[in-house]
Image: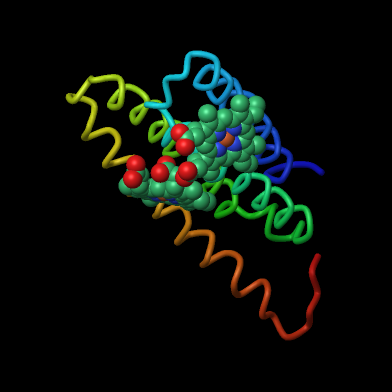
Length: 130
Ligand code: HEM
Ligand code: HEM
């Protein structure tokens, strides 16, 4: 695994470590108020980034494109902004809400970009994955 695929899998592992640490903190403190941050770190962070990593691993020709790099950075920056923003928002910092809103839109835009990258590659008649 290399390039964008390796970047995504590295990001996925960092999300898993942070999200599980938060889950343990929630369990030990019996304060589940950060549950949405934990849930999104685990599924929108760890699981989605891992799926992206395996997609680019299976389609190395897509991994080499500029669009793939844009996809990685938009996903990473908006995802981290979303999770840190939501963590602060749920902690009572209401002024951070615009960051959460903008990051959510960025995260959705990144998914749209992924659809634009992945669907033509999947449906290419030659079935030439590389
Ligand atoms: C160290 C391991 C983990 C701990 C201690 C932990 C702890 C927790 C806790 C305390 C909650 C809140 C439950 C509630 O308030 O109803 C929760 C919810 C959740 N966790 Fe974890 N978790 C762990 C790992 C994971 C993993 C590996 C995933 C997914 C890959 C995950 C996904 C979720 C999801 C999606 C929810 C929200 C469930 C709902 O909507 O009710 N967690 N977790
Ligand atoms: C644009 C990005 C996203 C936004 C703005 C968003 C927003 C939300 C909101 C408002 C809730 C309800 C929270 C509550 O009732 O407390 C929720 C729940 C949930 N979302 Fe998302 N979501 C996004 C992306 C995703 C993605 C990509 C996944 C999975 C891959 C996901 C998985 C979940 C799960 C498992 C729950 C239930 C656990 C919880 O209540 O936190 N979300 N989301």
